[in-house]
Length: 172
Image (cartoon, rainbow, N blue to C red; front, side):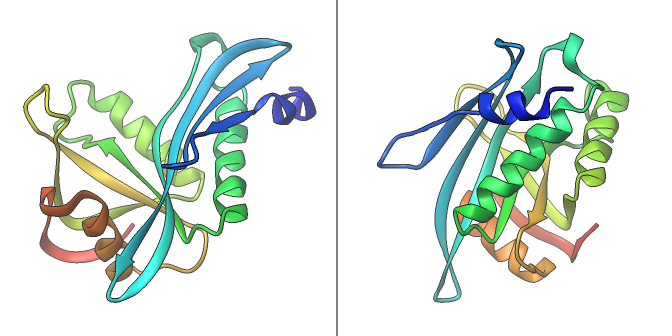
């Protein structure tokens, strides 16, 4: 694995108004994946929290299970830290209702192995406008210490009424 060329290949572009980033993952000069995230500030209980919202991380099939996904995710964690983010938030398919439960479980476990935790005790309905709402899980990767209650409040500030508490809030 060419980590140094990999790191140089992660070039980000950001618009000045919304801090959205789209990064190319390159190996030996070839684009083999992408990462898209947004840096936003959310007000929680009168305090502003800067967070990263991960939209997407993907690698071409031939480059999976070789460490490039791990390196890409570690790069995101570092970039979020350098931008003063308290945490990274993202959605994942709920394994128990996903069309392919094995893939959904594998994806969730991959994020957990890389330091993220699932926000339990909530129900989140992803709505993108052009499709029916889909129940998803929300995951959190703390950059700074973040407890479950704060993670819930930040997530609520991000996604609004599509997130509701349905049980004991925990990060697992």
